[in-house]
Amino acid sequence: MKKLIFIGLLFFSVSALQAQEMGFGIKGGVNFASLNGDDADGWDGRTSFHLGLLAEFGLSEKFAIQPEILYSAQGAEEEDLTLKLDYLTIPVMAKYYATDAFSIEAGPYIGFNTKAEFDMDGDTMDVKDETESTDFGIGLGLGYELPMGVFFQARYAMGLSDIASDGDIKNSVFQLSVGYKLF
Image (cartoon, rainbow, N blue to C red; front, side, top):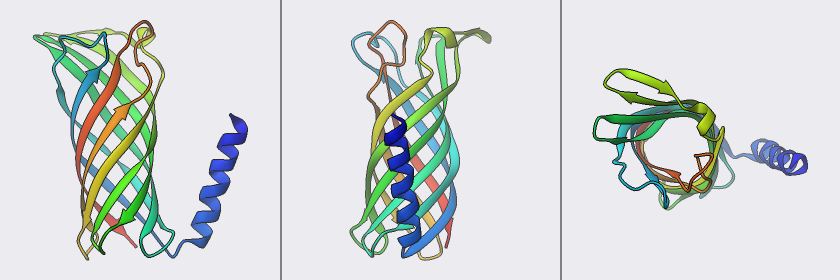
């Protein structure tokens, strides 16, 4: 595992040094989160938010790598019960620019659980001990960037790992974002 992390860091360091263009930015938006899996029946989606920072390293005229760090509020609802799952997520998206403004993105993410609680009519119960501390998945999305640096993204993030200690339950979230990049 340490070798894999080292190779990944080395790749991103070399990519950054060879980058044709590099930019940093902020983004935020709305999450439409839900749970998937055999043990996730009966839960409805939860609408929440995400907010974070990003960098973009241009590898060529058409390709870029965009690592991000986001605070993402997720979870699900069932009648008067809300499961609040908050994560610090780190997606690393490979981007292909079909045009100067329109991009297609895909890549893995890792999420670190910062909060896991049930909320019922204002009473909360911590369930962090019953949830996994990390979430792994993959994201697929589209982006559109205006010449002034304002951008819009739509992304679906599908969890690949179980989030419950004893069940087949995975995160699923559709994100709509707006942001601003400085180059």
